[in-house]
Amino acid sequence: MNKETPDQHYPAHLAEQQRRYASALADGQRLLIASGALKYAFLDDHSYPFKVNPHFKSWLPLTDNPDCFVLITPGEKPLLLLNQPEDYWHMVSPDPDGYWVPHWEIQSIKSFRDAGNRIGDPDSLVFIGEEEEMARSWGITEINPRGLLASVHFDRAYKTDYELVCMQEANDRAVAGHLAAERAFLSGSSEFEIQQEYLSVTSEREKDAPYSAIVALNEHCAVLHYQHYDRHAPAQSLSMLIDAGANMNGYAADITRTYTAHAGIFADLIEAMDKQQQAVIQDIRPGMNYIELHENMHRRIAGLLKSFDLVRMSEDEMVDSNLTFTFLPHGLGHLLGLQTHDVAGFQQSRDGDERAAPTNYPALRLTRTIENRHVFTIEPGLYFIPMLLEKLSQSPGASKVNWALIEELKPYGGIRIEDNVALISDRPFNLTRQSFAVESA
Ligand code: GLY
Ligand code: MN
Ligand code: MN
Image (cartoon, rainbow, N blue to C red; front, side, top):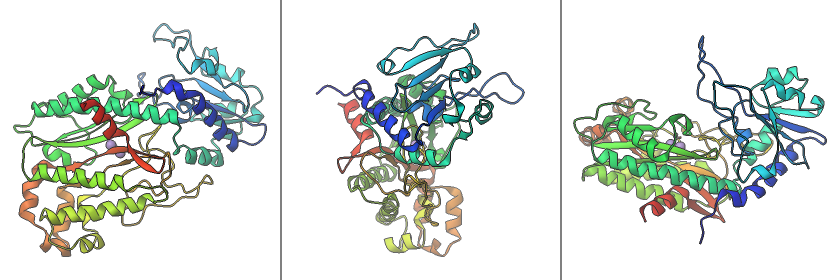
């Protein structure tokens, strides 16, 4: 079978976008969405990397074009106001080309403010973007209305076929990078060299990736959002935790793998975690709440702590006393899509009502009921974090912990395994494992 490509599904995606946004607008309203503007460092004339407004890129695969707008009039062809300023300092956007172009009316503008002359009656316009003051100066009063945002944010969790294909391609791209990173780790490279290798294979600049990659060796694996890249390889590379993604048409992949170069208990623990992670995924069905999955994973972590003789307590006791939190102090996962931690993970309906994370798991970012076409991550961890172990050592459960084994494992830092999962036709489909299977074939 030929591989599906985004262009096949773009027209249906655009129609669904029209439907979702129109249903959230009042009769006669139109919608203006800004792509965003470059931001400059304090007292400097150099900008931060550009991050496009996710609402803008949900309409078309333009992710690196500041100062543009889309103008949506329900029932009409959408309009792109493409900024093509007179500028010999920078590369000006060429006229766009690609499968999406015939579906748009495209007008060239010479500056962000130039758009103000093209938008028509401001009374009928709703504006989505950061440039609230500018919108007000054009006479627009409906700016980032909460009701409209809640409605389209809620719907964003349901991926169209176009979005699923983009996310599969983002996974393919990231997985090629992960395989290269694994090779670099096994050959003794430094964190910095591994990161460079990853970017070279995914063909993304750091600023193009959906998030700053974590490339951690040895005890650095225990820092949840480790943010450095050591230039020098350690004397001995025991373990690597790499959390690195890629984008495709503005849709993210968010993948973590943990490796060790040596056979032994840490390698066995990685393998056992991998099995538990896949078992949680396998059981996912529509109608489950994500909190159930998170709790289920804590029970599985308790099982691992017991079977590896790390903690000598019953699984129930470990979960009930929150001991597993020491080893898994983050959430099991989050919605994924236009943003790495996509919006509306707590939202329970289009109206915007929210369900907070349970008090004993405050870092959980997803409390929704899982439904078909949702895409989310499943990323359990099992870490040896000195600060949290220190607290555990002063808790009532301390005497049940096998501290000698913990000390043995601390130099490895910890484990996290993260896949991107879509629920399709009532069954989980693992986009990440699909990419690994194809790459390794
Ligand atoms: N890469 C960020 C996360 O896994 O949530
Ligand atoms: Mn991640
Ligand atoms: Mn994640």
